[in-house]
Image: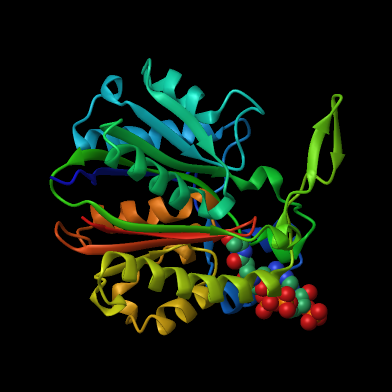
Length: 321
Ligand code: UT7
């Protein structure tokens, strides 16, 4: 009998009040609501309070997912956090989260694949569960990109927001994750990066997010459509048989181009980019959390999640809810 990794809980957390495009312009950024909406679809984002960390946001999102699943944190045997804005250089944000949740003994580690980090973490957790080695996993995407934005670079600072999203996966005879696909192309490191590090107590290089917007846009559209197809083929279904697409929420034009290529109508695509902005590793689980909690995604439906981010990395996970 096959063992599946079945999603039994979802959770999400967005810090503070929504910050509008008008608010950003009022703070002195040389931009406009019109430009941001037209180029990206973003109207609002949430920004963490000073001192609010990825692990703190992750703990709130995890609490929601654990409650929905009816799983006690002590019973988790796997905790994976996807983040590019960890609390510390080490230990991992997953271990800090584990301590906050009061779990001892679970396998816990971070995954670094930037905006596709949650997809990578979910696919890894699926493999742990299907191997039989683990039974109850918490997978979290949490990022505080506001800390790594250059607020003088209008080409990037208006695009991102902060937040965390989480899912609980449990071993089950019922499906479950049906297929996943993960890829990277390290020749594209420089199109989206934070090219800095701490050396001998000082920042070396550049500690802010730098992006070649056009190159990222074009690459994202190309790889997202192909990885969606790859995942559907692996599961033996046509892309038209997907009930819901929950894509990375970076730009509504990227989302529209991908769903057009997949021939999926708007009604089957979950979008939160207008209200969340790009929350990096949190974007997919935050959107999933909303669509499950408001009843759009129901049991038995097929859901395709996909992500793309710095590295360049990309991937997709197809599951039956
Ligand atoms: O998780 C993956 C992360 N990233 C992405 O998915 C982003 C992918 N890229 C994009 O979404 C788009 O490339 C952007 C939204 C970043 C930019 O859109 P674009 O249509 O490619 O604009 P552009 O970079 O060609 O800029 C057009 C103009 C420029 O002015 P000039 O040179 O034509 O006078 C920019 O200086 O828009 C200007 N501009 C702005 N104006 C007002 C750039 N940023 C802003 C801004 N407000 N915030």
